[in-house]
Amino acid sequence: MRKDGIMKRLFSPQGFKNILAIFVLLLLVKTLWFVVEILFLPTSGVTQGLKSDAKSLYYRVKLTPNKIAAPRVEKPKVVLKNDGDMKDIKLLALYNDSKVTIVTVMYKKKTKVLSRGDNINGFVLENGGIDFANFSKNAKIYKVSLYSPKGKSKSSISQVESTPREPKPKQSVEKPKNELGDVRDAGDHKIIDRSLLDHYAKNMKEIYKDIGIGEVKNDDNGLEGFRITFVRKSSPFAKLGVERNDVIKSINGQAITSYNAAFGVYKNIKNVENLTLVVKRGNEEMELEYEIE
Image 1 (cartoon, helix red, strand yellow):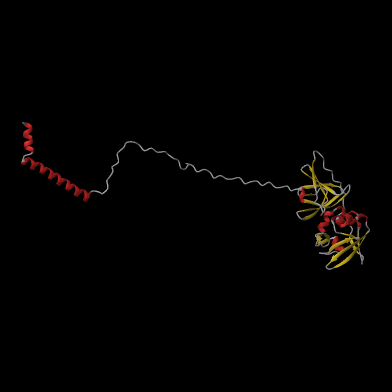
Image 2 (cartoon, helix red, strand yellow; image 1 turned 45 degrees about the vertical axis):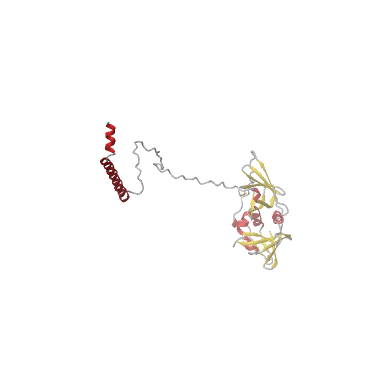
């Protein structure tokens, strides 16, 4: 009975009107919301982030130190100086006897005259033989043979354990220069005092203080004489009559085309009584005569 009463109310004309009114009201609300959504709300949706109590995970990175490091200073490289090699030295000529050893060597394209005890590039001249000279350095002996244009000079090395250096011979006390003999003009020749000649023979280095001598080579790079590069004024050589740029061609008929020839004259200088010097001055050759007393 109760169900039939409810059904009759729902399907009665009044009930149907009520239901239709509710649908119309809902349709109006929906239409109104649609208009508001179009006019006032954004076209895209807004996502609201969820609130979380979790803490962010991160690492602390130390990008710069608290203190600036001192700049690193590189130590300069120490360049060790090369002591040189004996192969750089050529033995051009030598004179050797029991008391005296004199050599002419070439080092870095320059010639130099050495006697016992002198050194070149740290190598000390000790003594010599017929065709070789001995140099010492750092307790070692270097044997250097005479240089030959056809074959290169060879050097050998041997260790010296406790060999004492040969003592230098004591030189006799020389007279002062003002007591040495002089050069006198005798007209057609010059007279040279033997004491002056002996003085230069014992002190060869003083020759190069009073006169300069350089090589003169031909087109084949061979030696053809020695050029006088300077003559010191008031020296005995200035009184000999030689001049700057004179080229010494021969002495007593011996052509001076090698250092050995020059040393051959030097070796016998104590025994000669006359000297004939042939020099080329300009384009002419001339003879200079000397007498030794």
